[in-house]
Structures are given as C-alpha cells and as structure tokens.
Image 1 (cartoon, protein in one colour):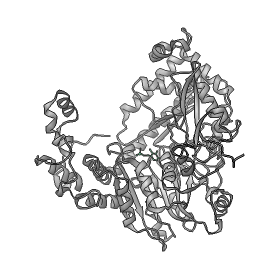
Image 2 (tube, rainbow, N blue to C red):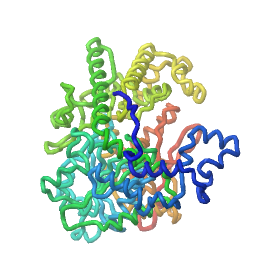
Image 3 (cartoon, protein in one colour):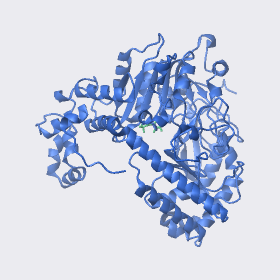
Image 4 (cartoon, helix red, strand yellow):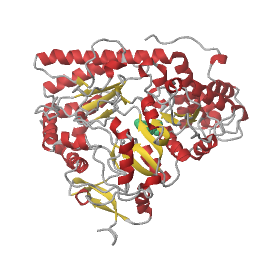
Length: 625
Ligand SMILES: *Cc1c(COP(=O)(O)O)cnc(C)c1O
C-alpha cells in the first residue's frame, strides 16, 4: 500500500485536533497546570532538555490544563470535545460516543456504573477480560456466566448459541446460590467479548435481537475490534451495526467499548464507548452515562490523547475501508504463504507451522469462507448447528507442532513459548503465546516488509531447531541468569523435546481444553470475598491446600487476562483443568526458568530453591464445614 504524502488544509482536520493544534501554536503564557508549562520549564535542566527533544516540542505545547476555555470541556462534553465525540458517533454508527482516556478497562467500568446497581444480576461471558470482572466486584453485581467453548489448543472460544437460550439462562439463575427471590430476577446487563482474543466474531445483530427480552442492556466489549464499521466483511458482526434498524427487529439498548489504541491510531489507553438506544421502552437516562464517565475519569485529561482519538475517527472515516481492506489482504497473503509452505514441507516429511483457519480456497474476502462450521475439524470447537461465528482473518494464530488433528498430543512437539521467546529476541513481538499456538495481529499499516521479516524469523527458528543449535547461543539470557538449570551442551531442539515431554506427561491438552469451560462453584458474591482481605479474614495457602477453599483474588494468566477463578469461588479438586494447569505451571517454572507464565493473583515465593505458588483464600469460619 502506498504511503500518503498529501497535506490537509486545517479546515479539513477533525474538530478537536484542529482546535488543539491552533491552541498549541498560539504559544500562550499559561499560569496554570501542568508544571512543565508547555515544555518551557524543561529548558532549565539537562534531562529536561533531553526528554523535550526526544518527544518533540509539540507534545508539550499540546499538553494543556483543562482551564483553557477555547478547548471546551472534555468532562462536560462541550465545545470541540463535543464536536469530536459527535463526529465519532456518526462515523461509528452510535447514538452517543464518549472518548475514554484510561483504556477500555475503564470504559467497561463506566458501562457497569451506568447500568447496574449492587445486587443486580449480570450475565457475563466467562471469557471476558479482567476489567469486566473487576467491574463486577466494584459494582457489587451478582454474576452468572456464559460458558465459552474450549479446544485442544487451549484457545478460549466463543460462547455457543445454546448458552443464550431463555431456558439455559433461567436455569443458571435458578441454580445460583447467590441469587435470592429468583422468580423476579431478570438480567440487568449482558456482556460479551467481541471478538474474542483469538478473533472469533459473533453475529452481534442476531445475539442482540435474541437477548432483547432477556436482558435490560447489552454490552459488547470490542477492545480488539474497533474497525467492524469500516469493511463489509464485518457486516452484522459488530455492536453498532446498522442492520437491526432496517429489519425493524426488537433490540435492547446496546453498548460497545473499543480500544482504539490497540489496533488503530490512538495513543495507548485511548478508548471509545459507543451507545445506542434500544427499540423498546427501556431507555437510558444519558445523564447517567455522563456521571459514570466522570466518576471514572481523571480531572486532568491528556489532551493529546483525546486528539489522537479524534484523528483516528477522522482517518477511519476517510480511509477506513482501504486501510482495513489492505490489512485483510496482507493477512490473507501471509496465511496462504504459510499454508502452502506447510503443505510443501509436509510432502517431504518435514515440519512447518500451521495456520488456524478453514480451508480458504480463493483469495476473495467472502465472510462465508471464514465461518466456523460444526462439521469441520480445523477449529477444534464443539460448535452447534445454530452457531454463527466467523474467524477474523486479521487475527492470525500459528500452530506449532505438538497437537494432532485428533486432539491428542503428538510425540513430536515444539512448545510455542520457545518460539515466542526466540521471536522477541529478534525484535518481533507476538501478541500472545499458548502451549502450541502463537497469535499475530494484522493491523492497518502492516505491510509486506513487516510480514516478510516475520517469515524470515520463523524460517531462522526452524533452521536453528533442525540443527539443534546450542541453547545458550540462541538465548544468551538463559546462560546469564539460569546457567545451572540447563545442561551446558543442550541445544534448541533438546529444550523443545524436554518441554514437550513435560507437557505431554502432564496431559496439558486435557487440562487446557477444560480450563475455561469448567466453572468453579460460586460460594459467595465476588465483592464479599474480595473485601475479605481488608477485613482480615483471609490467609495464604499453598496450591495443594487450595481445593475446597474460597478464593479472595481473581487468578489469571496474562495474557490473555481472563480469570480462571473469581473471588468468592471455591477451588475445585486436583483433577480439574484449573488445578492441573496451576500445578503444572508451578513445576514448569522450576524446571524451565526463563519461560515462566505470568500470573496475576498468585504470590510466588522461593522456598528450598524452588518457586512455590501461594493463593489467598478466606479463613475457615465455624459455620463452614
Ligand atoms: C485489552 C482489553 C481490555 C482493556 O483495554 P485497555 O484499553 O487496555 O484498558 C478490555 N477488554 C478486552 C477484551 C481486552 O482485550
């Protein structure tokens, strides 16, 4: 794709960015915060001059206090800020759009604090990001969960259609130990992640329509999917899709939150919250949204970040289709290159990485081809006939050898963590690594050079693996930090074999596939368990002692940042997917230092020269047996 070299006359720039540019170039004398005074205060120190130069003068000139009247008010949605948000709403198909400057993590909390009161029942996909789960705790909501599908690669799939049925939801409410007066209970807010981390997209239109009578409000966390509105490939797949109106369907009020910074052009943390009123009588008092937004916003907004959100909307309005179309093209090129190479090498009995995708025959961008059909084996999910899920071609999951088509661990395997570490050492940062899968995101601006670079690095890894290159040459940091843990003459292939054997012995395929579909039993409400810490009612125990005890924290591997257990839930027994996985990870950290999984919610201690996981649980009271 050709780079753009044109100029834009000021009147064509998006409104907030235009106003900020004008304000910053006027070089006013500010007798207000911030203390760097438009960068002037940095000239009096060496470090100050250095950082001013590094970022360039404009970022300082544009970082202004909210007392600048010409700029309107970000928190009150007035002036240029309001104009920017109104434009964005139109561009994205929302009734109302608010820019959120603390990421979708905060935008999700705003949605909860707008719609949910303590004790309200919320229906939440168990594959939701931790920020949704935090919102449940903060808001003192009572969660019931929609169970996602799992597969042999340990990917966390979409929630199947069967979970959205009225009877299924009713049964969950009836079974919940946390819900009293069950008959009267209706779901206040339903939350789904669209797309999932690995790129599985719902038919948002269909689900919203089906949920209209079952929930007051619908919320799609589209942190990974801020571009659905700009390409026909994604028709009906995103929350703000215009289709519902035309068909005259009954729709609940719908929210969507998007991390504009994750795949588009805002500074990190730049996020958008979109809202559309439903077709029924249940409407939202918009002042409630304004209040909840303010409650979660800093009173010192970062104007340059707001401007990048405004600019992102402007860019997508003008060039969105072309940018997304090119990104899909590039992703499909990479995918088909990888598949052809895989087939070619397989004929010689040699290995190469596989791509998680259906058999896409042509290069056309027809969504049909990317559907997850029940009869197909490639995705490994147990799909139902009425499921309507697409794989987003932009989210590319590569599979390393290790798991056969039958879902059993193969004798030959290359754990993806080793490949991930290798790529990072070559300056290539994948989004996420699983046991035998590794995720790459194709975003606008991904061009052939970047793709070719990735292909080259993958080939280099294969070469080093095949010759069993000395481990410490491939990973110098292992020699520097963990010399005594690895044999001095070990090679890359030796390490992969050891690690694969370890995972095979611990039956990782079985544990991983059950990890998010077996839900632990809820004992008390999440917020009550969480307060256990402040109330001095909790203690740390070793992993082995956890089964049967009630968790105080959320425990999650990061990435993907999706909880294994929530506060208030009871640790399941040692045969459960979760306990097997945690136990295996604890031992893995000891045997393969330098390849540890990052966990949130677990305290790692060193005892007898080995890492031990400690878990915070509620103390046993007399009433509990
Ligand atoms: C990353 C992510 C978030 C949080 O977004 P930030 O913009 O990083 O705060 C929320 N939900 C999902 C599904 C995410 O992947």
